[in-house]
Length: 486
Image 1 (cartoon, rainbow, N blue to C red):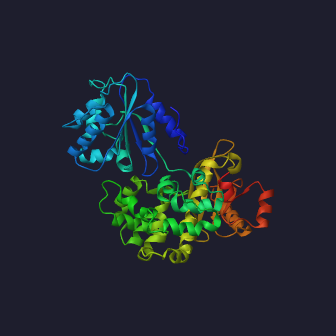
Image 2: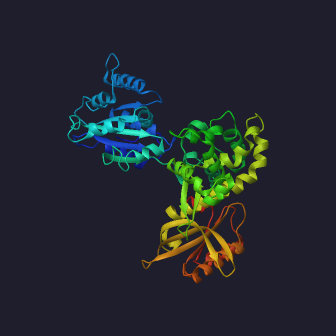
Image 3: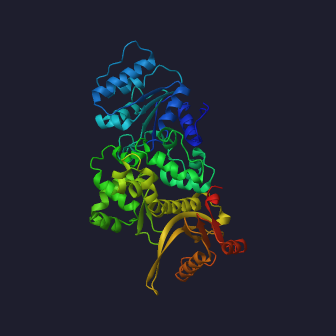
C-alpha cells in the first residue's frame, strides 16, 4: 500500500501500519496506536483502512448501549447489510468483528477506544478473551487496531497486569513533528521566524491546517501580525486551545490545580519546591498533579545534568506554555474584540523571556541530542540536559543551559560539551569567557576535561571577534538558528 498523496512525512508510522496490516499470519492480531490529539492519527488510520478495504469505527462519548448500537450500525454498513446489526454485549460485538468474511488480512480499526472503555470497563478483558489462542475467533486474519488520544489511558492499556499486556504486535505512538519537520510543514523559510512559530504552536499538524486555516507568517515582518490574527484572535480555535487540551483528558475532573502547576512552570518555576511555593502548596502535595500532567504528555520531568536527585519540570506542549505565560494573565482583555494587537505589544517582553528563551534552550538541547555530529561535539551524545554546578569556594551556583554527556573517542564516558543559550542578544567573548570559567570549574571537580567543547547558541548572532575565535579554535562551536535547521 502506497502512502497517500498529500500526507506530510509520517513515513515511519505509515510503514509500520502497512507492515502490521499485511502480516500474513492466519491468527487475529492486535495493535495499539496512541498519541496526543491533533497529530493526525485518525487521518493515518482512515487512509490505511481505505487503502486496504478495511473497517473503521470512531467511538463517541456515550453509554454502553448507545455505543453498541452505533457500532452495529457502522459494521452493518461496511458489510452491506440492509439493517443495523444489534448486539447486547461487547462479547457479541467483538466476536462478530473477528468473523469478518475474508480470506486475506483485513484491518478493523476502533478509533477513540478510551470512550468505549470508559463506558464499558470490561472491554479490554473481552478483547483479551477473543484473542486468546484457545478462542474460537483466534484463527482469523483480522488485524484489530485500537486507537486513542487519551495518552494516560492508552499508555496503561498494555502495561503491568492490564488484560491486554503481551497481546499486541504493534504499539505505535504518533508524535508531534520535531522542530525541523514543523518548519517544513509550515513552509517557513526564515529560521528565526520558524523558531518563534515553533515556540507558540510546536509541531502539531492540525494547528496549521484546521486551526490556522493554512495561515502562516510570510516572513519575519509578518510574525507579530500572524500572532494577532490567529493565536490571539477570539474567533480562531487556537485562541482557546491552551485551555482545552487539559480538559480533553479523560478522567481529569478538577483542572484548577493542574492549571496552577502549569502556570508556575510556564513562568519560570521549574523545580518542585519552586512550583509548590508559587502555588501555595507543600512539595509533597504536588505528586498527584505532576503525575497526571506527565502521564498526559503535557509536562516533562528532566533530571539535572550533574545531580540525579535534582530535576526540572518543562511544559511539553508549546501552546500551553504560551497560553499560561502570555494569554492567561490578560485573558479578560483578549476576549474583547480589537484588543489583541495592543495586548500583544505589551506582552512581547514576557513572550521573549518566559516562552521564546526557554523554548530556544530546549531546541538547543534537542539539536545536541539528535542532530549534532560526533565531530561537532567531540563524541557521541547519550545524555543531554540542563544543569546547575556549585562552586563551594565562592559559595555560588551556576546554571548551564546545555550539558552533553556521552562517549569520547577512546570509548570512555565523558562530558563532551557545555553550552550557553541566548535568544535576543548578540553573543560575544564575554559569553565564551563564562563558559571557559565553568569548564575550568568542572575540570577542577573531575567532571570535565580540557577537551570538553564550548558551544554558544545565539539567536541574534555573534560578534566578529567571537566568530574569529571559533574559526581558529576547534573547541569552540557557534550555533545560530540557521545551523539548528541544517
